[in-house]
Amino acid sequence: MNLSNENIIHIKNDKTEYIQFKKLLEYQDIITHAFSLGINVNYRTITKTEKGEINKVNYNKAMYDYENLCTSLELNKNNIVRPCQTHREQVKIVKRKIKQGKPDIYVDEYAETDGLITQNKDLILATTSADCILMLFFDPVTKTIANIHSGWKGTLKQIAIKAVEKMQIECNVKPENLICCICPSIRDCHFEVRKDVKDLYKEKFKNIKELDKIIKKREDDKEKWNIDTIQLNKIMLKQKGLKEQNIIDSKLCTVCNSEIMHSYRIEKAGFGLETAIITLK
Ligand SMILES: [Zn+2]
Image (cartoon, rainbow, N blue to C red):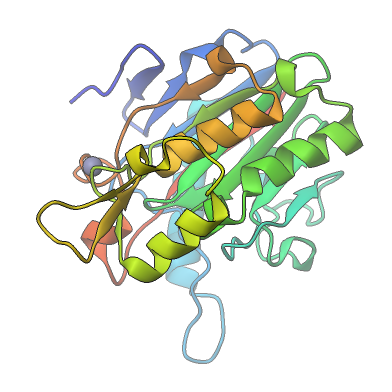
């Protein structure tokens, strides 16, 4: 299987498998990035044992997979900085590595954080997901990068917009220069919600034109709705000043492609995670 399309290329070697965005590859002298593929990989580390300790088996497996991915991209996995991701809208600027000789995962600094921004070289911003939307941002003018986790809660809380605003204020980024790449995630073909979530979205985005084309009642089940969260994020980003041609979509649904990507909807309990990474050289 090769998932390459007009926006992405699919790379496979003996160690690992991932996609890259063609638009970001135009700047590969400045940045390195990837979204992992494979259900044999698992970047999940934040699970605790009954005693409240970090699950060492999961942690070691994730470190092994990060090692393979980073080696393929000529990166050092010890430079990884990963937020705790709790479906909130907090975005933080990363100034430096905290732990020496190992990745910054489980760092108090990034508790309740779902997005990271940096202008510093050699910090690998990493997020994880199994259906949620991960977004990679790059501004070639100020050389600013960001990595955002936006599930249905994050999209409702407009974390992508919070990230752009933070980059504007703290990094002098102009939205018209920003590139935003949308990684594989659950799409409206499979993202269905009940009335409670549908009502939250209808209220939050009531000013968006043609909302009926984005939130659609399922024909086969009157108590469920499909929501196009990708389209909502694209509309929000354009309203914020990003250019349409700078919003690049991988166009891949994790549920439709669950044989090669982790999907929470398919795997349920014990689900694995893919990762998106981006770093400045
Ligand atoms: Zn799908």
